[in-house]
Image (tube, rainbow, N blue to C red; front, side, top):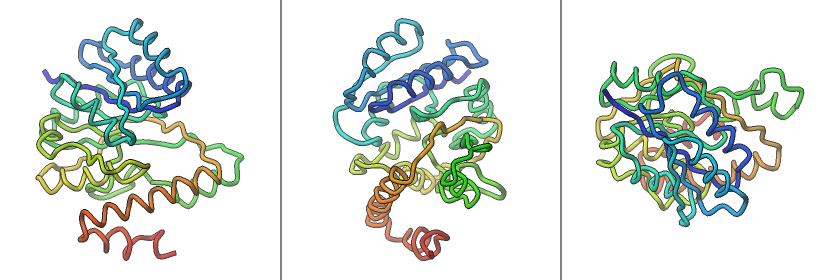
Length: 252
């Protein structure tokens, strides 16, 4: 029976992280079936205190520190610590539904060797904020959940995705040259797909991305993604048509 390691990178988000840990530790399956690994990317708030307290509370939780900047290096540190056959990546602002871990395990039983991409929703259904309504109604922010048809590496978003551990190690994990926000997960997804790893969508592996970006935050993140997209295309020039010339947003 397969077990799974949940890897969570974090940096200076202790309040959000507290809720994320509580939700991932409140799953429908016994904690003996999974471990939780939180890697602190050299935070300056009280993240370390939170992790020490949670590790005393939950026997299946371990944590470490990664000083090298970037989510790629931070997730790789978690990958190296993992003891189980499967890795589930979520982020420190993602609140797992109670059946999330069980759903990932079930899908790996049905589709061995695949990467399982869970469903992610944004908590903006009834928002009165006009900017969030704009992002929601026009699907400007990444539409994490596929609406129809087959999916590919471009849906490999590490806020809710699982992959066999050995498969990740075989392709070398995340590229640690990605040091700012964006594209390091899609770049890994591309290498996984090129190595023969199929992407499957698991609609019952549900989580909520607890993010409420303001205009300035959104613009800053968009600029970072643009820089990271340049890195992606330098590494894989064949993706320029896909992400630049044929992009719905880039056309505007």
